[in-house]
Length: 339
Image (cartoon, rainbow, N blue to C red):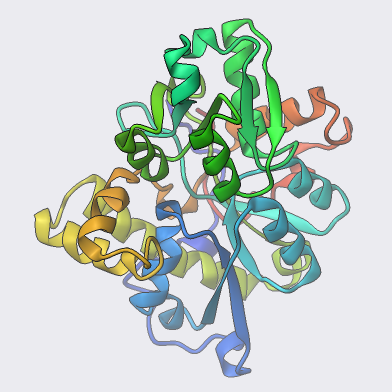
């Protein structure tokens, strides 16, 4: 059961109030740079930009795209990017320990009853008997880098099944996909908009669900520099307000189907500008729809999941054992809960 533990008003300026007024950032002609991946899980940022929710919150936003979580965390720390959505990684935690960044909200979550991230097997491994996570013992599992979310998920699955497997760092999602399709690695886990088309092609097979092992996993978080969190409270609250409107639109259209098929089609058209933009709309749409997972309303944050991730990174010796949740997270902007 969710339990709300803290609330502030900064990030929860509703759609009715996030209108019209010029905030300091836009008054100073300041460009606010938002980091993103070309995943459907980043749709709240796309919607907030396209529907002028950031602008109505007083922000002139520009999107900057990355291919992995780690470079995005470095960009936040260096000031090249102001806000971003990504999974918690060892690199992100270490930057928080150095006083460079803060997690300020939640984005994508695993939720029971909603299709989530899939555990995949290469065709070669599948044909050789890898048909469920219980057979992962001795197999190779793809990840971008050590300390990535892929490393965390794979380790959690292995621990739950009581087995050991090896991890192969391949830096980028595209490289992991290529290695899985060619049989250079045996397994991987990824969001459904990537997993389902791969499985549909026959090159890989879905053998399980991450939600069976991490039912309330806070997959991605919203984060910023520690300086922004501490010193740019108006701007940070304005960003979260615009972002949260994008979240609400996405969940309403794609999860709750409040606008029917017309609402789905309109949202898919918007997302297609950023995700699978190199494909015709008719080919991109099924993958975008397959990627539908719940985003956290109001960017609220599951601190129990974040603590579990932090504890795992510490247990693996990937981050300092003395780092606390308070070092990583600024809970003053959004609701937090434990699930």
